[in-house]
Image (cartoon, rainbow over all chains, first blue to last red; front, side, top):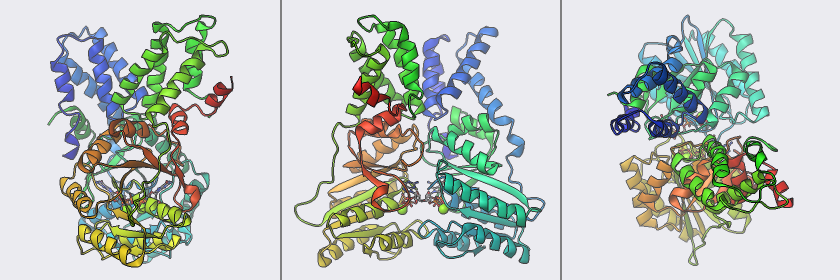
Length: 295
Length: 309
Ligand SMILES: Nc1nc2c(ncn2[C@@H]2O[C@H](COP(=O)(O)OP(=O)(O)OP(=O)(O)O)[C@@H](O)[C@H]2O)c(=O)[nH]1
Ligand SMILES: Nc1nc2c(ncn2[C@@H]2O[C@H](COP(=O)(O)OP(=O)(O)OP(=O)(O)O)[C@@H](O)[C@H]2O)c(=O)[nH]1
Ligand SMILES: [Mg+2]
Ligand SMILES: [Mg+2]
């Protein structure tokens, strides 16, 4: 519900203020899309596609622009909508959560654990961030909130070893879902990305039978750098889904449009706050409607 | 990053001008389109870009094309100069109070890097002979206090806390008292991350401000922030009257256009930048407007070549 502010109404307002479709209208549309972080290239492509349609179908009424715009965005997002659900069947399942620093990985894990627990699943968490100060304690607080156990080592220990132990524990306890936290890392740091690959090798070797989700967490406040993040994390880790956090703020998270277009990775969840309930399944229709003003 | 992107494009757009004496309006308009794209790609806010482009246009039209430069370089030079000017031409430092302790408060969105920056600042000023105290006013985030305690331990700076059951305003007050009693001449208040539209939590910051009267309220901004940076900065500045900005995570590969946005809407200087997760001197720097300008434009060494030309 919280993504509804913002551009909502802007497109409507714009369209109402024009008697005919002209370049000024497109300039303003460009502004709306770019300020939603959709990105220059994607924005240009969307606008070009709309212009083509306007021309070929001899559209005169500015009101039609809104539907054309939504069509374009659905086209980009919709292709993926079948994959929007979290895949944790058949069990056992393992969910690895990765991303750059401070985007909301640990918090999202807490929320997912809470949700799955509520669905009656047996969930286990792995404290794979052994680097950041008090990251383990933070995950433990979330474990308590969700009522799930956390497998951890000490700060400074090898993250791959934590994941190894957590996998053994998941087996021993018949956990249906193991969710692994990892340290925040910038995608341009080669050594840290290598560390991720090591974790993946452990999973491959020790838990190859498990249904696997690799979720990249993106902060909706992030601009075009998110595309770079998605590309490089995808190279290192075969991302199966995205979590878009902090949509309770004023950022629109439009960058996922550009990412979906380039990488074909579906958004699985959105984060809309800091409490354990503040996680929603992503619905591309609702997202686009929220962005472009349909209550 | 040598000759990447914008510089190349401008060169080719303006190649045909070679040999002309002056840059015409049409030439500039064409070139400005490339500049506009580059700035938007770098996440500079749309409105800020618009204003900037208009300003540069004015200056560039009719400018003499210097003998030694191609018109492309001439325009790059103007763009860069204007950008640097917008970013604040001089470096700015912390204002120390004549009556200790100097009180600095870090505020910002969730996950921006406040707590880490608190550690870095504590370490830096300790090395400069100050006796810092970190005050733990984040009572909300799970294990936030523990995090600050570990950070404080890593740089060997004491951390004041009353746990997470007391009001942050009281914690701040008591923290200052503690500093006075223990001879700490530099207090860094770590606050919880919050949304700029969260009236309750923004009110909490206003309360801390009116109680302890910080000498510096610094807004910590993630360098990867997109178009929303202006909303965030505007709100924090309106509600609190910030004194400056700190830009974090510049060790990434973001262009960092948020720097320009934030600076343009608040008019407040960017004081420090964060460059890593560690707390040592290498992961914090004083802000350099000129470096930031060429980073946003993605021009690397082009500028130093132009300077030499
Ligand atoms: N408003 C809001 N804040 C969020 C959301 N998700 C996470 N946060 C906050 O963002 C901050 C960072 O969240 P973390 O979960 O610690 O992020 P992380 O990616 O694990 O961070 P590192 O492990 O340090 O890389 C915390 O203050 C969270 O409470 C969200 O959806 N909305
Ligand atoms: N790469 C990099 N990471 C940073 C930098 N500054 C902070 N971080 C990381 O970003 C994440 C969030 O940093 P914090 O200091 O916890 O951020 P915060 O603003 O205190 O977060 P909240 O208290 O949850 O609002 C952590 O993983 C830090 O290690 C930086 O300059 N570069
Ligand atoms: Mg974490
Ligand atoms: Mg903090």
